[in-house]
Image (cartoon, rainbow, N blue to C red):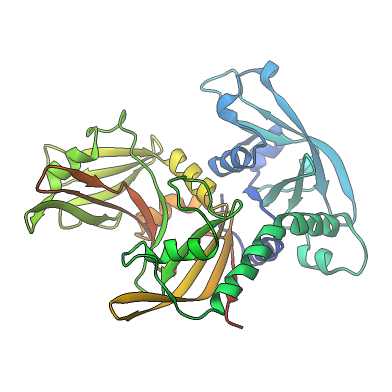
Length: 393
């Protein structure tokens, strides 16, 4: 998809502020002529995460075609339509999508926004529609009604969470649950009455919580994801430790960060393999070379599932009497990560991979997984414009 214009970005910012979850698609001239569009990875991930449609479960051919009611918004009027979701019989059945009547509102390379509400696709031309004027209009219109309905329904939980965070901020400094790196997260969860568990589901009624100490150098944890061992040369992280670990105080450790911009001290780096749509980890040792593989589509889905809606909560930290204390002061509210930017953020070093793993003297291996992290102050590169809250005002 092409780069969004400043106007298009501002429209997304306004819609995000109003809790509208959406995905984008760019029809080509050929696609408009043939009434066909590729269902891109970001579109497929959106449809699956919203429980609308899963192309992976869909058969190929006309008999497996799925039709979904659709409303096309043109401003003060709407067009009733249908969306066709299918996988052709030819080749590998690459997922396709089409909205009947799209040619009435779109030219080639316009950006079309897709959301889902009231059991229907709701689509509009993000490039051409005057989103701000319609939302702020004193005259009732279908688009304004849609945004208000979505905002009310989607915003209830986030308003509740924001209210609780402000109550926590008013408490000032609170003692950490434990004196460790995980203390800040466990402390916030206790204050919100969230039970500690190992679930990968979002923390608070469908909203993910990420807390961090007020430091410009802190990278933000995105998610953990095991490599695809079937595609990888190595079949466990213990192999990684045995090949690249280093000794420190009698313990074999591998605490390092892997980037796409150059090799680390262990000679490891990430690279994108476009042909297979893979993320690959490579060693500079000729006998090893490429040794880990993640399917990029799997990583995109993990990102979208984990961070469909997230509150990033920043706290001031201080140490007193050998105990850590936190004052939660700010929160940033993001929605709908732009998964199509994942690869470029890996290649430019904004997204990195960490694996903290070690073998204790007794032979026990402690492995905390492969953790994808985002460079500090890069949320705006991965998410549409967010809402920022000062919790102590």
